[in-house]
Each structure stands twice: as C-alpha cells, then as structure tokens.
Length: 163
Image (cartoon, rainbow, N blue to C red):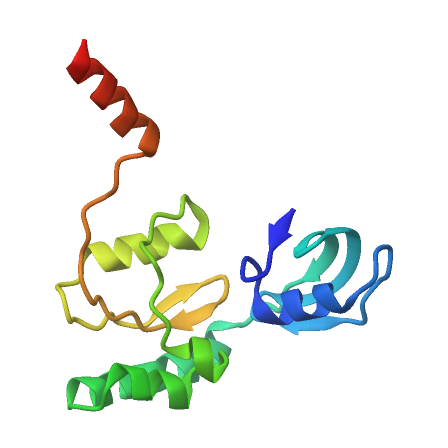
C-alpha cells in the first residue's frame, strides 16, 4: 500500500480518483503512459496495478533538452536564483519544481545516478544536466548532512553502555 505523496503526481491523482476495481483512461506521467487499476483502498492508502508504456526518445530528441538545460544552468551561474529557474522551466508543478528532496538515500535505479552526481558537487554548486528514467535534471547541492543512525542501533548502543 502506498500513501499520498509516494507516487508520481499525475499517476497518483488519477489513482486516487478511481473506485476499487475501476480502470483509468490512459494517464501520462514523466515515466510514460499508464493504464491504472485501483486494487485496494484503506483510508488514505491505496494499492494499484498498472500497465506502463514508455516513450523512447532518440539522442536527436534529447539534444534540444540538454542544450536548454545548459542555458538554464548558465543563467543560474550568472545570478538567476535556482528556485526561480525551476519554477519557470521545470515540467513539474510550480509547488514541487524547486522542492528540496530530503536526503538522497534511495537504493539503486535513478537514485544511484542522483547520488553519484551529488557526490561530485560542492555545496552551492549546480550539476551538469543529468538524465534519469524520469527526464533530464539540474541539481543544486544545498548542504550535506551526516547519515542518521537507525533508532534500533541507538537503542542497542544505549543498552550496551549500561551493561
């Protein structure tokens, strides 16, 4: 089961509008086109099944996107705020275009590319255009945080210190 905010917004909006057992019309998201079936709903949690058809872009299709991102990056480096550039140029909604992603600790997939890109950045630096399965991105590193230890390891250490 997933909760609101866990899915791509286009997919999520369509899925939450369905009744259990209902099938959606084709829904476009950054990942491609979906046909969604709502399998289960419990309060604000849902379970879905879907068929995804990805759109394969050629290098020629991507070249103008990467060129645009390079121009946007140069504008940011020349003084335009990253947030303003995100609001005016991002394909995401205005609210989430310049959102801060909490810690990039996602395992595998596109997250590995994000983490690799972030690991090469200095605080305040803007990445070169980065391609993931969801599109092309620019990343600004705002700060670095130390990894948090899990609650279970803190509790275990507390008990060990008392033995």
